[in-house]
Length: 140
Image (cartoon, rainbow, N blue to C red):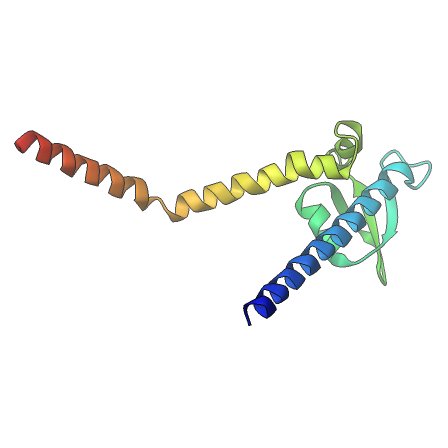
């Protein structure tokens, strides 16, 4: 019975990793297409990309692209590559390295801030406990 539960957990873990890989490949494809194949004769890196909205939302949330509302068809999005999006290739050499060094780092910082706000009371309790112990040691 334990093996079945463990196998189910492994299958879910494998499925999550596959989904993450597919997601990251699509994000990388969008950025590469905007950086290397923009619409010609434009001062900015603009392109019309066929993809799903969740990828666009992810890129917009991370300030890599901006969504041009003027170009929106079924499954096609008008996008402009922002300076952070250009930095992916110019400074970091690719999406995987940029994600590891910038986005993952920011996610860890945000998670740490969230935990600090959630468990603010632990250092207070420890300080109060050590204060009580110090007072007891002085009195005894």
